Image (cartoon, rainbow, N blue to C red; front, top):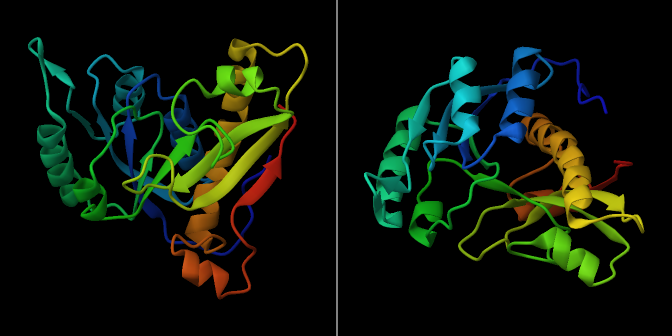
Length: 227
């Protein structure tokens, strides 16, 4: 899928990314940024795990990293302490958008409401269905015909913010939770940069009332992808 939808100069979005794991979606954004295919500047990455491979990906690309490990010297860092340091770091970076890409800590309402920029999250289901964890197993057990991933605005209620976009695939009779996870990840790698591009060029508004009162299509935007 090509994400180059505009030839007009677009001011790069300053993006901060929160991660916990391997960072494959972070790498997609890094690659698109470096190739000039996406009008973004990744100003920093925050990880709540010091062993997350996403940290290596960011450092290898010369991106500033803040590791706020949820376990420090055998002691668990409380969420309030994490949020205090994360807030200070985000305020220093001054991003236009905060992206949660495989970030596995639940954030408080105070942190979300006082963040210096809107926050979006990538979730592996077609929200509002299958909020939370183990989505691939739950979808198969329920006999669903479709599955996919969603990008939504982060709110205090888990996986409940305005859904901006969704990537949809048809479930195969041979799918297992592992194969479905891999197929959905292919969607994620296409949906995340495409959605960020739409935000950058004004095709998607992070304020639902603005989207509803304009000529823009209703949310969520749905892409059927053969993955």
